[in-house]
Length: 462
Image (cartoon, rainbow, N blue to C red; front, side, top):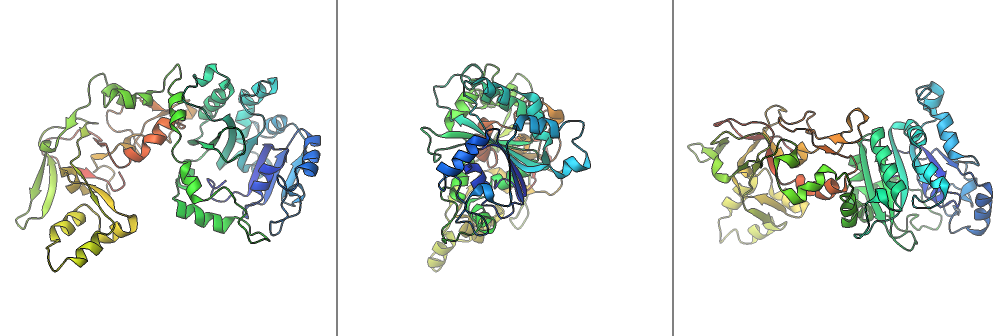
């Protein structure tokens, strides 16, 4: 729910015991939640025997004793598949009345994908139903689905295991054009094992919410979650630190993902190094640009003027880094203590030339800075002027062009770097999710061909 900035309309598919409804009702932004459960008897019995632990809202300021009676809850005893497929068809998806009934968040809380009953196959392998869910979401809408027990390292490929429905559903979701997908494991559910969930966003902007730091999430919790009559927090198992633990998928998720018979191309990053075949540009090895291939020009007063190429550099060449230095957070305090005994101007000059400041060090808890030539490269705000960047500028996890079942890598500036080829990466790639932190701060690449004598320029944030 916190992946959406302001969820007002929410739908729950299943959820007859009322626990999912209870969690949704904790959000003060909520105006309406439509819960569609085919088994009316299950809801009635849950209201009797699982109250208040599962479906009690009596501690919520402004709610009711039973979550099923909250005025924001619209509980319907219908077949959710038929309800969605009849309401959100391709033909009427843009009708004015239908648009008003679309949702910000849809939560699938029905059967587990690994259940062996026939209806599980109908639920998770029905492309018409999955398309109706996509149609039923607003442009910035989010689908949340529980996908059963989390994978372990020894699991076989999902498409030939008991998790075949999970694999089928993921393929359908990617094919529909969701722009950003995230899977995570949660072990506080009270089940015998950790459980896997999928968050699929129609708009890639939800990534800014998904990757918020713990302090930002805690602030969002304070603003959005209702107050309780008891004075206790209504969220017992979730806070900013918990959200941060969902950012990087578990190793087992990546391992099983890469066991697919049609192995995703990005799985080769860790086994074939920086080959052109991995980057989708050919069959050879990526060119390596060493520190000696770059020259630094200096003014008469000793100021760095530019960094230029000493030879022609092909597009997507790997630029070696120099030694990485750690600047501790307390560097300013340390220098102030000993300023009467030592000249620290070389250190301060180095930090400032790297585009940082002593204040940044204090706020960010220290910083790692490369001592290589590229640390002296100037930044540019020009889209066309930047000719080098970190690998995250080349690898785009967000593009799902033309509703393709896989995404083509493009740079964050809107076009594929010269020679980028046709490497295709799924919007839900645990390989890239696990490696993205490294790609955002390391692995500098030339984004196009750079001629001998040309100045090396980098765009801020690249």
